Image (tube, rainbow, N blue to C red; front, side):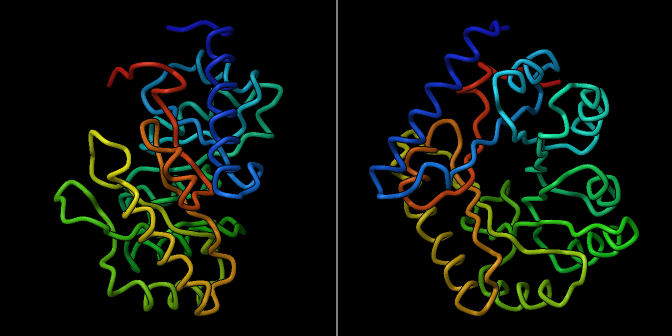
Amino acid sequence: MIDAQELARRISNINKAICNSSLKSDRNPDDVTLIAVSKYYPLELISMAIEAGVRDFGESYVKEGLEKIQTLVGHESFQCVRWHLLGHLQKNKAKKAVGVFDYIHSVDSVELAEIIDNEAQKLGKIQKVLIQPKLSDEDTKTGIDLDLIAEFTARIADMENVQLVGFMAIPPNFDNSESTRPYFQRLRTIRDEAIGRGHTSAVHLSMGMSDDYRVAIEEGATMVRVGSALFGPRQSN
């Protein structure tokens, strides 16, 4: 496991890369949020990242995320941290997810959105969500069909305890990061079309990971999800 000094160096380098990519595309670097993807990484690394100034963390599994959040609640900077659920959310886990995550990135069905709305209503909470469109034909990728997005966004707009704040994408894996650019461009178009239909809060584009976040920023990403470039090789549980 890397030490605090090495982690701080990596955070600094990634923030510099975010700044450079933003300026390259005439964007304000402050408009891009670094989400440290902490899935499968130990609490020690997450705590060091919080101490180094990282304020957004992403988990893929509700159970793992909940355990970490409950353990870290005593950290002096815990109240400043935002938690993002990045992985596919099973409907039977929605209740727990709404209770702990500030953002749910992977909403891909009206039924799931309705469950989230109901659970958020019970908690007196407005749950921020992002829609995950299906941008490729890969069987391993979830997401809502592109021809259903307009109807989906309209349904969410009618929900009292769900706020649509943007869209999320996971492109296919490519050896060349440039190959992801068309997928990022497509997501940006989807976002812009939604805003054009009146969904003015749907400003976020959650796209780009360790290998391609620079390209994603050039194409408009407002949230980049970086794990291995920060924390090193991941070991699955």
